[in-house]
Length: 227
Image (tube, rainbow, N blue to C red):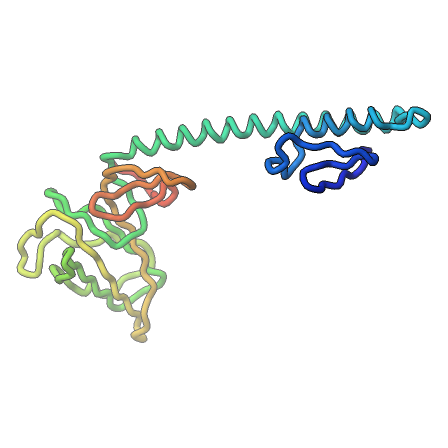
């Protein structure tokens, strides 16, 4: 086996001899070339009266082959990750202009009416007050959906205000207050839909989809994609 080497001020000490790196500040770890240099240096400074036996030579050559294989695998993995990242960045662009579903309480109202919006109740409720507000926080619609079973339910709203008039297209916010027969709150989660207006590429992580008049969500936050 190659003897342990101590590092002092950018040098490796082997068998009483020092080997200095060209740029010690950049050598926090040993790479394939360093391993080979240490191996050759050991051969140069070994005692000619006590040459390295064949078993030890074979062992060190095996270690070198292992380092070489690991280096090749690392290079292949790096290329694979770079290729996968490129595909992901390209795929994100294809979402622009499409409607996606994700966790949220924003409700997009188009000329044709409200976009799909779902609420999921963890347990049954005897009352479910739904309130819809505009971007200024003003209430435009409010009603009690009454008794509802646990599970997922579509939001039953036709897009009209308190006076029965159609609301203007835009982004609205939905709040839901559900209670059981004892008057205790029931957990409710919501899924909304929005149109992807643009893409952001952070330094780390997946691309972000900018929702029209909504938040920026990661690719892994998408539940489904519409037309």
